[in-house]
Image: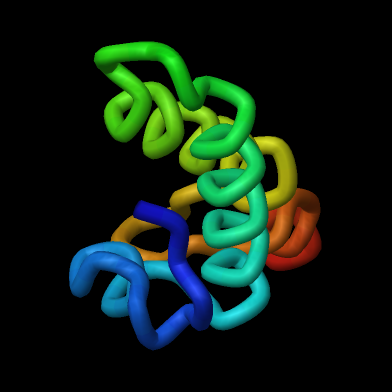
Length: 75
């Protein structure tokens, strides 16, 4: 089901992603949810689309998700 707010996201998403990444996840999930309305795997697809959207803007470094390019400035 679509998420009305980031507080409605699954706990693992809320625990691990920064707030901006959660907003990206929610938006992508909700859009995919509508786009795949007739598909039996709708929810799974929507979660995959949401993670792909996050990974276009964020990268996991250790246990943290950071905006792309942010971890390179520390090198």
